[in-house]
Length: 242
Image (tube, rainbow, N blue to C red; front, side, top):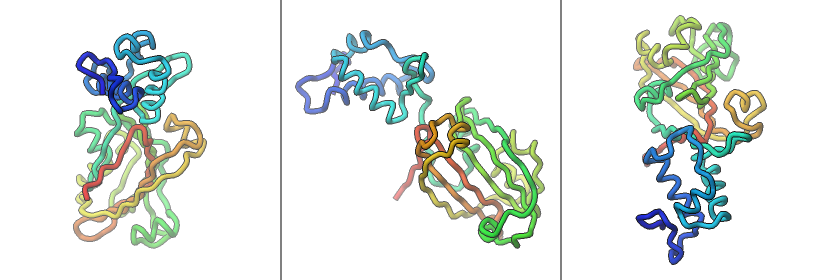
């Protein structure tokens, strides 16, 4: 690995590019290279690490794949915000971001009240004709898109208004309405982004996205919300304790 001076150790069995990537990642994690900052020029990095330019380029490509750096045409290579690591727990994304000081913000993209179809109605334990609020939100963290979320709440559980959903997290509203989620069933998967989803999340079409569906129940056993969410894997990770 790199020595105290940051120079690569050519006698180490660890590949040079990986040593350089570790050094750059350390600069990011320490705040020496803060989120949004531009990566130093190759000549400067070569002087700092003692690595060749091919090793530097491979290290940068590796960190781009890992979601640490991003290449932008005309803007160079920049440091991305730290990826959100979220434990699988009964909290909302808004709660988690606020707790971590990540400045959550919400863009409400759609809102309607009416029947929601057989599949979602079955998950919520309501008749297919029963009215429910269905809404789509884009969740941002530190000004960057993080998740595209579609949620459904039965109308007789919580009489939601569009304005409620831009300044508050859904679970905050459910708690205030006397329907705090106490248990949930959650399924995590992955799929490719469609064109509209990719545009909303600032990803290329076809980019891999994390998927999450959840049905939550309150302490009486009443289903209070159904959610279908898409997350950017470069900005978000699911943490499991087994």
